[in-house]
Image (tube, rainbow, N blue to C red; front, top):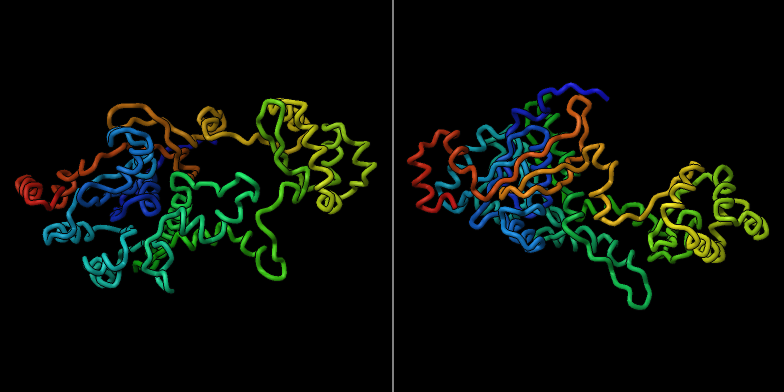
Amino acid sequence: METQKQKKPLEGIRVIELANYVAAPIVGRMCADLGAQVIKIEGRGGDAWRSTSADHTKTQFDENPLFDIFNVGKKSVSLNMKTEQGKEVFFKLLEDTDILITNTRQQSLVKLGVDYDSLKSRFPRLIYATVTGYGYEGPDCNAPGFDNIAFWSRPGFSADMAIDAAGSYPVNSRYAMGDAISGTALFGSVMTALYQRERTGKGDFVTMSLYNAGIWIMGGCIVMAEKPYCHEYPEKRNFGIAMNLAYKCADGEWVRCTVFEFERYSPKFFSALGVTDEMARLGITNMQIMMDRAEELVPIYEQCFLKKTSDEWLKIFADLDIVCGRLNHFKDVLEDEQAWANGYLQKYRCTNGAERVLTTCPVRLGSQGPLTLGEAVMYGANNRDVLEELGYSGAQVDEMMKNGTLG
């Protein structure tokens, strides 16, 4: 599609991010990609995710793609909110702010006087967005939450998707996937509140918990667990539609087909595997019979798939118009022409100049095309320009750096 570059949809919107780790900063990253001015408030030492993420890549803060993926395009101000002058700066920032994002625990927000109830009258147009572990009600409303527990474990995924066999164990959730899903969902709510404010002139309180997002994403599994369905987890290898399971190929890679129209596609599938006569002999004439007799069929199909490589199977099924895909490795995505062609991946430079790859914001507007990545930012890099824009003099900024208001 031919696109004509226009003003980005969130240009002119100011976002203050009083948050660390991932779920809340995801909202700021998406807003920044869409043109908003996003100012990240970092306390002493910076966002804790800077250190955690750098530990994973064994790099310094100036080459920190696991941090940058959630924070490019923002400005960073190292503001000590525990000082009176720090709070003065914060409130001055809020005067022209449209959206405040935080995952700071409620007790701390109240103590600082920056909880929603303390701000809503003073800043009636402000959209106040929060991420919590478990929500604002119930026995665990004040409990801290990380995605590996609140998103993956408590909603049921970690236990019920673990294969029950000798030597097996629950899969280890990695690199804030649940946080990213939760933050992306919250972004949608924030945009809804922003749209509503344009019509009413009133701000709003918007919230998402990691637990809420996990229950939503795992909703189908949770519904199937209720009575009278009582679906059992983990599902066994031979459960379901045998044509749709993953099978290992001659090259050690796995492929998986997806077929829901039995009459239309099963003859092609059986022919490709060379089992047409055998399926007729076994009486596999509809999808329900295939599901009921999966225990017999899976070993047959397993032996068939081992006769060809994954590339060969992909071509065979593509020619038959049967949906089939390889079970890729994460590293394969970096070489995937489809991902690059659509701008799902982009190259960027770390603050030390190293060129790396990041994933892009999952928003596509016809007027914009793929959204471009902003620049990586170091802790406190924008102290001076942000405060001087607020009207503080250079001498005042220098004094704040000396007295600990700015880290």
